[in-house]
Image (cartoon, rainbow, N blue to C red; front, side, top):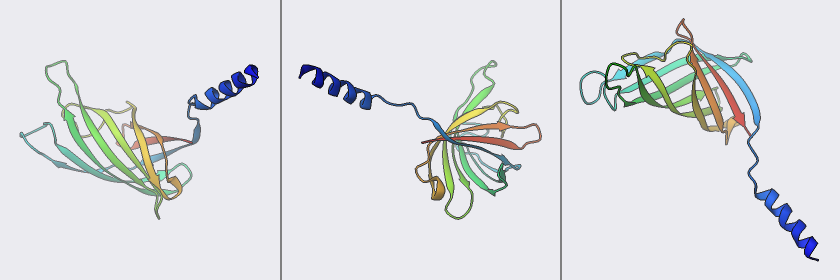
Length: 159
């Protein structure tokens, strides 16, 4: 009988062990040049709390299209000559139309004094939710700015 309880306990422990998330869906979109609005808050020039709002159209690798809208807030200002980047926190909505959206949040390092990310430097942000066909989505979005000013976003959604 002791052997039976040992097996039951072992199975219960296996059920409690977290199973790593596996990629359920991966796709990319190509974002057009963004329209950016800057709001200088606080001290003149680049400072904590400055806000950038943007919008841009995109095309997905399956031909679908939509719009991205985001708000990006400066949260870290470089100090000294060797500090070339500042950190910005973003909240982004990727709207595929109807009720199909993905919500993105996270940080990225931007070159000091620049409105956009450095070219060919990927940044990872979290997919924190979605609506419609993306309801309950989680995963990540890797963003890379291309030299022409376009952005490539690769999404990895997990189950």
